[in-house]
Length: 193
Image 1: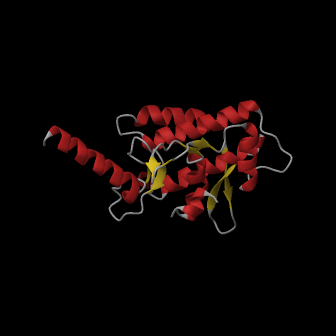
Image 2: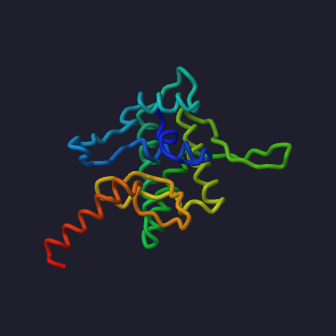
Image 3: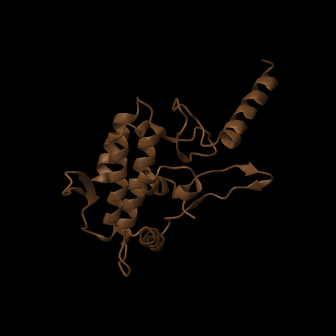
Protein backbone atom coordinates (compact mmCIF):
# COMPACT_ATOMS: atom_id res chain seq x y z
CA UNK A 1 0.00 0.00 0.00
CA UNK A 2 1.26 3.47 -0.88
CA UNK A 3 1.91 5.85 2.00
CA UNK A 4 -0.41 8.42 0.43
CA UNK A 5 -3.23 5.88 0.63
CA UNK A 6 -2.47 4.90 4.21
CA UNK A 7 -2.22 8.44 5.60
CA UNK A 8 -4.62 11.36 4.94
CA UNK A 9 -2.85 13.25 2.16
CA UNK A 10 -4.48 15.39 -0.54
CA UNK A 11 -4.50 13.53 -3.86
CA UNK A 12 -2.73 16.40 -5.65
CA UNK A 13 0.45 15.85 -3.61
CA UNK A 14 0.38 12.03 -3.32
CA UNK A 15 3.40 11.52 -5.59
CA UNK A 16 5.47 14.09 -3.69
CA UNK A 17 4.43 12.56 -0.36
CA UNK A 18 5.26 9.02 -1.47
CA UNK A 19 8.61 10.08 -2.91
CA UNK A 20 9.89 11.98 0.14
CA UNK A 21 8.72 9.16 2.42
CA UNK A 22 10.27 6.43 0.27
CA UNK A 23 13.04 6.47 2.86
CA UNK A 24 11.88 5.52 6.32
CA UNK A 25 14.26 6.84 8.98
CA UNK A 26 11.98 6.11 11.93
CA UNK A 27 13.68 4.41 14.88
CA UNK A 28 11.39 3.67 17.77
CA UNK A 29 10.00 0.81 19.81
CA UNK A 30 6.26 0.34 19.94
CA UNK A 31 4.67 -2.35 22.10
CA UNK A 32 8.07 -3.98 22.51
CA UNK A 33 8.76 -4.19 18.77
CA UNK A 34 11.50 -2.10 17.16
CA UNK A 35 10.51 -0.36 13.93
CA UNK A 36 12.82 -1.26 11.06
CA UNK A 37 13.97 1.70 8.93
CA UNK A 38 14.12 1.10 5.20
CA UNK A 39 14.56 2.59 1.75
CA UNK A 40 12.13 1.77 -1.06
CA UNK A 41 14.62 3.20 -3.58
CA UNK A 42 17.83 1.58 -2.34
CA UNK A 43 18.77 0.19 -5.77
CA UNK A 44 18.18 1.21 -9.39
CA UNK A 45 15.86 -1.81 -9.75
CA UNK A 46 13.78 -0.65 -6.80
CA UNK A 47 13.53 2.85 -8.28
CA UNK A 48 12.42 1.29 -11.59
CA UNK A 49 9.67 -0.65 -9.82
CA UNK A 50 8.60 2.44 -7.82
CA UNK A 51 8.35 4.53 -11.00
CA UNK A 52 6.56 1.78 -12.96
CA UNK A 53 3.88 1.24 -10.30
CA UNK A 54 3.09 4.97 -10.54
CA UNK A 55 3.03 5.02 -14.34
CA UNK A 56 6.17 7.15 -14.55
CA UNK A 57 8.40 4.64 -16.34
CA UNK A 58 7.68 2.54 -19.40
CA UNK A 59 7.95 -1.19 -18.98
CA UNK A 60 11.37 -2.38 -20.08
CA UNK A 61 13.07 0.96 -19.41
CA UNK A 62 16.10 0.84 -17.18
CA UNK A 63 17.41 3.29 -14.62
CA UNK A 64 21.14 3.86 -14.81
CA UNK A 65 23.27 4.08 -11.66
CA UNK A 66 23.75 7.82 -12.37
CA UNK A 67 19.98 8.38 -12.65
CA UNK A 68 19.48 6.43 -9.43
CA UNK A 69 22.02 8.60 -7.64
CA UNK A 70 20.36 11.76 -8.98
CA UNK A 71 16.93 10.55 -7.80
CA UNK A 72 18.31 9.97 -4.30
CA UNK A 73 19.90 13.43 -4.37
CA UNK A 74 16.54 14.92 -5.36
CA UNK A 75 14.82 13.13 -2.51
CA UNK A 76 17.45 14.32 0.00
CA UNK A 77 17.20 17.90 -1.30
CA UNK A 78 13.40 17.84 -1.03
CA UNK A 79 13.53 16.49 2.52
CA UNK A 80 16.16 19.11 3.47
CA UNK A 81 14.04 21.87 1.91
CA UNK A 82 10.88 20.74 3.73
CA UNK A 83 12.69 20.55 7.07
CA UNK A 84 14.69 23.76 6.77
CA UNK A 85 14.16 26.57 9.22
CA UNK A 86 13.93 30.16 7.94
CA UNK A 87 17.67 30.62 8.57
CA UNK A 88 18.51 27.49 6.55
CA UNK A 89 16.11 28.05 3.65
CA UNK A 90 18.59 29.76 1.34
CA UNK A 91 21.03 26.86 1.44
CA UNK A 92 18.23 24.31 1.17
CA UNK A 93 16.69 26.16 -1.79
CA UNK A 94 20.03 26.24 -3.62
CA UNK A 95 20.48 22.51 -3.08
CA UNK A 96 16.93 21.81 -4.27
CA UNK A 97 17.47 23.94 -7.40
CA UNK A 98 20.68 22.03 -8.17
CA UNK A 99 19.00 18.63 -7.78
CA UNK A 100 15.81 19.69 -9.61
CA UNK A 101 17.74 20.92 -12.67
CA UNK A 102 18.18 17.28 -13.72
CA UNK A 103 14.41 16.82 -13.92
CA UNK A 104 13.17 19.57 -16.27
CA UNK A 105 9.51 20.51 -16.60
CA UNK A 106 7.61 22.07 -19.46
CA UNK A 107 4.42 24.10 -19.46
CA UNK A 108 1.47 22.55 -21.27
CA UNK A 109 -1.65 24.50 -22.14
CA UNK A 110 -5.13 23.10 -22.64
CA UNK A 111 -7.99 24.40 -24.74
CA UNK A 112 -9.69 25.44 -21.51
CA UNK A 113 -6.92 28.02 -20.96
CA UNK A 114 -5.38 26.12 -18.08
CA UNK A 115 -1.67 25.55 -17.68
CA UNK A 116 0.13 22.62 -16.18
CA UNK A 117 3.68 21.49 -15.59
CA UNK A 118 4.79 18.18 -17.10
CA UNK A 119 8.11 16.34 -16.93
CA UNK A 120 10.25 16.58 -20.05
CA UNK A 121 10.92 13.00 -21.12
CA UNK A 122 14.64 12.95 -21.78
CA UNK A 123 15.72 10.00 -19.65
CA UNK A 124 14.20 7.02 -17.90
CA UNK A 125 13.95 8.87 -14.57
CA UNK A 126 12.32 11.98 -16.07
CA UNK A 127 8.98 11.00 -14.53
CA UNK A 128 10.31 12.28 -11.21
CA UNK A 129 9.72 15.74 -12.61
CA UNK A 130 6.10 15.07 -11.61
CA UNK A 131 7.24 15.25 -7.98
CA UNK A 132 8.59 18.73 -8.63
CA UNK A 133 5.41 19.76 -10.44
CA UNK A 134 3.41 18.79 -7.35
CA UNK A 135 5.81 20.79 -5.17
CA UNK A 136 5.31 23.87 -7.38
CA UNK A 137 1.52 23.44 -7.29
CA UNK A 138 1.65 23.05 -3.51
CA UNK A 139 3.62 26.27 -3.20
CA UNK A 140 1.33 28.11 -5.64
CA UNK A 141 -1.73 27.07 -3.63
CA UNK A 142 -0.19 28.46 -0.43
CA UNK A 143 -0.02 25.04 1.21
CA UNK A 144 3.73 24.41 1.13
CA UNK A 145 4.07 25.27 4.82
CA UNK A 146 1.74 22.36 5.59
CA UNK A 147 4.29 19.81 4.37
CA UNK A 148 6.52 19.23 7.39
CA UNK A 149 8.99 16.78 8.83
CA UNK A 150 8.13 15.31 12.20
CA UNK A 151 10.03 17.02 15.03
CA UNK A 152 10.71 13.75 16.81
CA UNK A 153 14.40 12.84 16.66
CA UNK A 154 13.48 9.20 16.17
CA UNK A 155 11.01 9.77 13.35
CA UNK A 156 11.63 12.42 10.63
CA UNK A 157 8.54 11.30 8.67
CA UNK A 158 7.20 13.88 6.23
CA UNK A 159 3.55 14.65 6.93
CA UNK A 160 0.84 16.95 5.67
CA UNK A 161 -0.49 19.15 8.46
CA UNK A 162 -4.27 19.14 8.18
CA UNK A 163 -4.80 20.95 11.49
CA UNK A 164 -6.78 24.17 11.22
CA UNK A 165 -3.99 26.44 12.54
CA UNK A 166 -1.29 24.48 10.67
CA UNK A 167 1.01 24.26 13.69
CA UNK A 168 1.50 20.53 14.23
CA UNK A 169 5.02 19.45 15.15
CA UNK A 170 4.63 15.68 15.00
CA UNK A 171 3.35 13.32 12.36
CA UNK A 172 1.18 11.72 15.02
CA UNK A 173 0.18 13.26 18.34
CA UNK A 174 -0.67 9.80 19.64
CA UNK A 175 2.72 8.32 18.84
CA UNK A 176 5.55 10.79 18.30
CA UNK A 177 3.89 13.61 20.21
CA UNK A 178 3.10 11.38 23.15
CA UNK A 179 6.62 9.90 23.22
CA UNK A 180 8.19 13.38 23.13
CA UNK A 181 5.89 14.76 25.83
CA UNK A 182 6.48 11.71 28.05
CA UNK A 183 10.24 12.01 27.56
CA UNK A 184 10.16 15.74 28.44
CA UNK A 185 8.04 15.01 31.53
CA UNK A 186 10.48 12.33 32.72
CA UNK A 187 13.42 14.67 32.14
CA UNK A 188 11.72 17.37 34.23
CA UNK A 189 11.00 14.86 36.99
CA UNK A 190 14.66 13.71 37.04
CA UNK A 191 15.87 17.30 37.28
CA UNK A 192 13.34 18.05 39.99
CA UNK A 193 11.58 20.85 38.09
